[in-house]
Image (cartoon, rainbow, N blue to C red; front, side, top):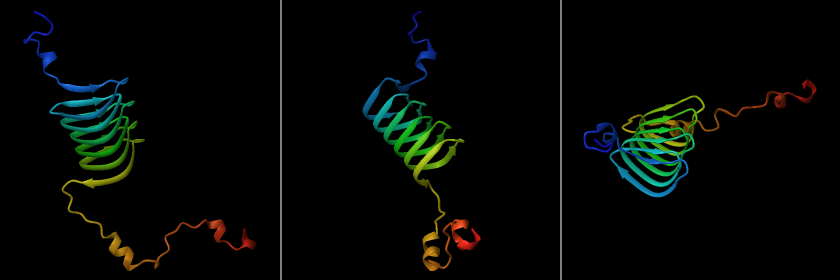
Length: 150
């Protein structure tokens, strides 16, 4: 039998969209399968499975997926049930998630929202009540001393 025959289930059972490390793609991907980005992608991705950004991969845009594993760079909006930021991963933008893990040295800068969370911050209310009551600025201890004691 040939390598691509219907009886060879190893080759036909796994579907994935793979963007190779020497590839730049602009556009959109909608799939029921995994997506692996080792190159550069600009646009929108919708996947019911896992989106993986390799260590050298870059994604600029929006992602809606079940699971995202970030080993490279993601700049944009991520909406996922599970977000894994690996030690080599960097995410910038907005994260919307149910669960998140960030490994040591993993990086995120932006806004987050937890799906289904009923916990609301009261910080603005408290801060407005007690504004200027407590000075929380960090003071250089040497600068606070009189000149004669320095």
